[in-house]
Length: 211
Image (cartoon, rainbow, N blue to C red; front, side, top):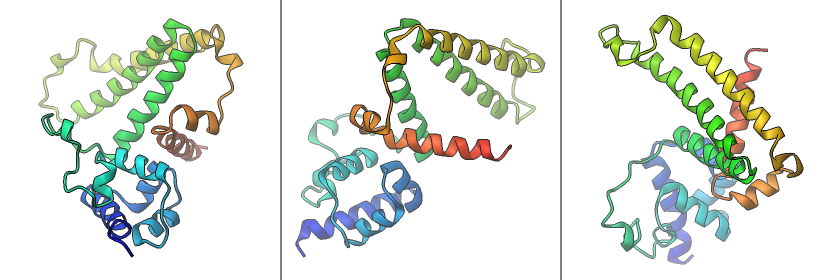
C-alpha cells in the first residue's frame, strides 16, 4: 500500500479525534454513513475526490495535507492570516444551514426576504443569550434595554411577526416556481448541504419529543 493510501486514513482519524468529534457526528456532517466513514478511517475503502475536498474543507486543511503530500495543514497564502478557531460541529451545522437559507432567499428575487429571515434568527439567538446571561444573578440587568419580565414574550411575538412577514415575502417571490430537492441542494451548495440535512433531521427529532 503506497504512502498516500496509508496517510489519508491516519490523518482523517487524527483530525477528528483532535477536535473531539465523534465518528457518528463527523459522518453526519460529511454526508456519509458512519460505517462508510469507519471504512475510510481504517483504509478498507478509498474515497472519491468529492469526499476528499469536503473533508479538507470540514477540517480546514488542504487536500495535500490529508494525503500526506505536505507537512503544512494550510496553503502558503493562509500562513500569514490569523489562525481561525476550530468550529465545533454544532456551530458549523448552524452556520452552514444559514448559508443555504440566505442563498435561497437571495435567489427568490425578493429583497425583503433575507431581512425577515435575519430577524427570526437574530431574535432566536437573542433569547438564548438572555438565558445564558440571566444564569448569574450578579450580571448587570442594565445590559439590556428591554426588561427581563417582558423580553421573552416580546421576542417570541417579534419572531412570529417576522416569520409571518417572511411567509408573505415567499408568496410574492419566485420560489413557488423553483423546486427544491436534495439533488438541487447538493448541486447548488455542495459544501453545506450535509449540515442542512442533518439540522432538519435533528429538528424533527426534537419536535418528536413533544408529540
